[in-house]
Length: 129
Image 1 (cartoon, one colour):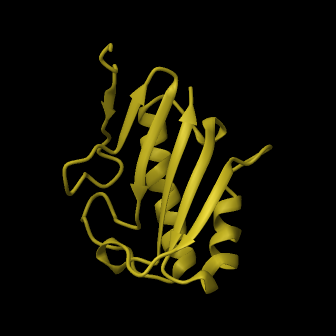
Image 2 (image 1 turned 30 degrees about the horizontal axis):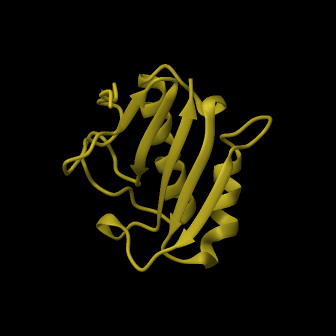
C-alpha cells in the first residue's frame, strides 16, 4: 500500500491549532478544513456577540484557511455546521448563505451538547482544488 501524500495548511490569519491537528490538510485535489470557531486570530479569544456575529467570524476564519491553500468558498463541496442550539439555525443560515455564490455546497447541520470554548457554532469544510 502506498503512502498518502498530504500537506498541512497553516495561516496566521486564522486561529492556530490548540491541539494535535492542522488547520487543513491537502491531499491530491482535496482540501479538508478543520472546524473553525469564532476565535480572533490575534488575541486567541472568542469574539463577543450573538450567533450571527460568531458565524461571521467562523466564516472569515475558514476563508483565511481556504485562501492559504489557494482556494475560496467557490471550491467548497461539503460543509458541516455544528450548533449549540438548533434554534439558531435560521440566524446561522442567513450569515452562512452570504459566503456562497452560485451552487452552494452539500451540508449537514448538527446540534451538539457543547463546542470548544463554549462557542455557539463551528463549521468544517471540504474543498476541491
